[in-house]
Image 1 (tube, helix red, strand yellow):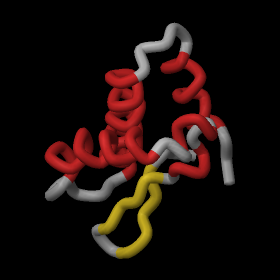
Image 2 (tube, helix red, strand yellow; image 1 turned 60 degrees about the vertical axis):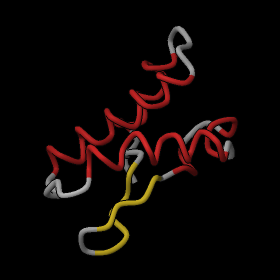
Image 3 (tube, helix red, strand yellow; image 1 turned 45 degrees about the horizontal axis):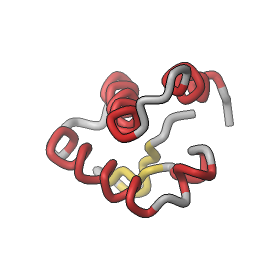
Length: 83
């Protein structure tokens, strides 16, 4: 599972439901993530490798705002969840 989902051809959306509640429901955090990602992701081809890279950008964006020890490992673990 990644923190981004393809919702239409060429369109990605933050999969906020998979973020911890204190992040997923945090409007300020979601806006900050959108700003953090927008300039880096627009125009990027949607490939599996790029989706993995974008997922890392989401985690990096969260850690910019909340540099909590162990949070990267916690968020990174979601990649092992298969849906």
